[in-house]
Image 1 (cartoon, rainbow, N blue to C red):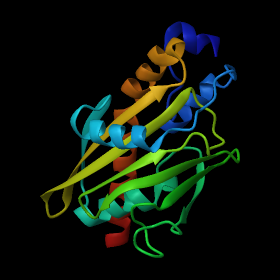
Image 2 (image 1 turned 180 degrees about the vertical axis):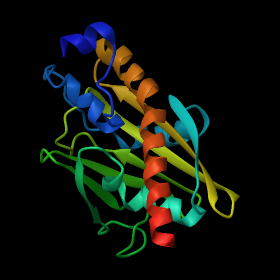
Image 3 (image 1 turned 90 degrees about the vertical axis):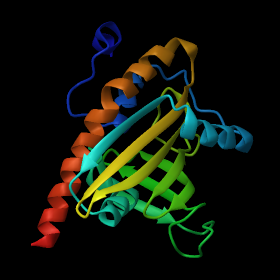
Length: 204
């Protein structure tokens, strides 16, 4: 923890989600319940003025990439063991859609709860990470991510990932910002390689 604070460096090959676990020694910070109006405001902001945004190109078809990123999170997040869905509040009964809950389980038994706010396959989706309902502690009040998909060619997809977030403390805002800035592209480059490998294997 001390090395992290002093050097602003993270251990290699850690996912964006797991980066914040390195701040667990600062257990005085807790997530707060977020008002629905704030979520709506942040959903608008992530489209026009995100805190961080990247684009990655993946050598796989549009629909395959969309389905993999939205449904198979556990296959490209390091340290994840499983993913579960709850569609009881989905706008489409029994299917992944707006209102669906995605629960990512980690190998250490912690989990993250994410609620879908947009779902327009195969072109875009957005979700809110509910830190209040998650057990993986992090110096965040919330985060919100939006994915946009464009077909570059028949077997190439461009993905734009935009995020907004709020640190649980002004003292930690700098570290949270650096965590996103240094890790977002690395994590999704790794995700791209995972998707491309799975697609090639499935096509054989």
